[in-house]
Image (cartoon, rainbow, N blue to C red):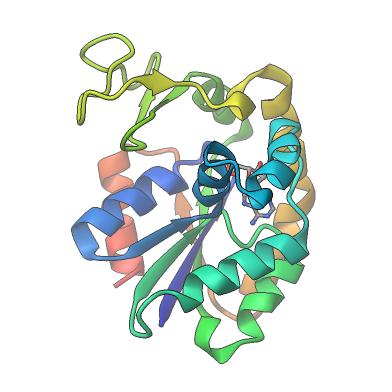
Length: 211
Ligand code: AMP
């Protein structure tokens, strides 16, 4: 399996780019946030456990996340090319990936972006309930208010993209990120991209890094 991890703050654009690469370059895009939100929507035991944690901007325990990613990766064909978006978020999660040769990470790409951009991006973000396409109330308005340009689904705001929760998510990110970057830098697997550029330019840079 060829595994790339996308690291970066909430709102740095890693999910949008991972989605594009899955459409244009055949990657499996695994977003742990999306998996947890799907579990909440379908009312599973995992969803019930995760809901309060997500809504307060904290991290779901490592043991739960490590089991989830292990099971999900094991369900893919062995030669898959995979982008992990939102995992790992802690060094314990990064170590768990490397501890299994089948899950060892090839390269980590860090989406670097100034913090002041993030609050604006996150609080204005709207997402299609059907296809997951992201929009923004200022930077990427849909043609028709509240409706997805791509599939006609309704747009919604994630419960954790609101005020204080955004602030907490960014604090949690800041508290864990340096150690995670150091983990991949120390094993010569870290690449950094400037995530404060037009999405098309970022995609070009990423296509080279993930080829
Ligand atoms: P995201 O969509 O990646 O921003 O994730 C939304 C929320 O899901 C996070 O704020 C966490 O509460 C939870 N979550 C997602 N991935 C992880 C992870 N790898 N470890 C712990 N919690 C996670």
